[in-house]
Amino acid sequence: MRILGMAERFDKLKKPRFIDFRLRRRDKDWQVGEIVQVVYKARSKQREVLGIARIISIELKHFYTPSPQGRRITYQEAQRDGFDSEEAMEKWFLKTHGPRVRQEPLNKLTLEWVNDADTKRGVF
Image 1 (cartoon, rainbow, N blue to C red):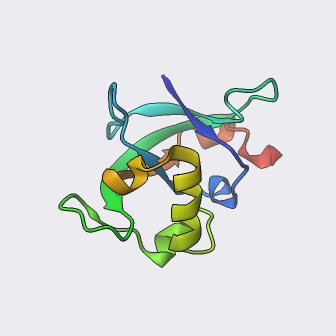
Image 2: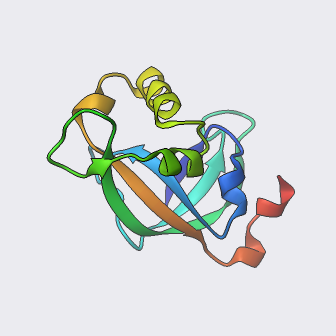
């Protein structure tokens, strides 16, 4: 089971279904039906497992740059992902991941919590 790291305790994680945008993986990209462990601060001593989720859909998305792959990220999607706007989201992605964000499409992952009673989501 792979880890889906979260840098913040986004409000979106309190919902039964949530979205998350990720760059495509170079080794083995995310797959529909894949079970992932959602972890807060995955690479630190404060690491905390928030729960187990299943990827239920994947869409290719991009920011403003024209791309033959996927559709443009909308204002509503950026808000659902925890940002104030597409511009704020793009700025964060550029700061975190660099120019790859403008060169490649992103995966829009839609996830749902698995075995909701066992997740630690209520501890937020």
